[in-house]
Image (cartoon, rainbow, N blue to C red):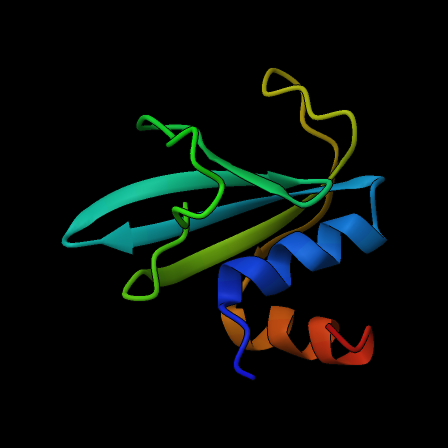
Length: 99
């Protein structure tokens, strides 16, 4: 079974509740930023569906970068663990955690 990128990132945050992932993506030429924390995703720039079956990170989105931020997340003063990770870097981290 092939698990979507969004679900894998949500699983990662379930295993690391002390982290928030800020994922910058491009969808249809428009940029968006998604926060993922404790298994839940939410867009920081557009409305997020109440239906958990509607993916916030669609399969056709291009990941620009991923930031790992210490929880609790404060947008005024974020405490970065790592910034500007590529999908390839994050995928290696996910594989190490068997996610």
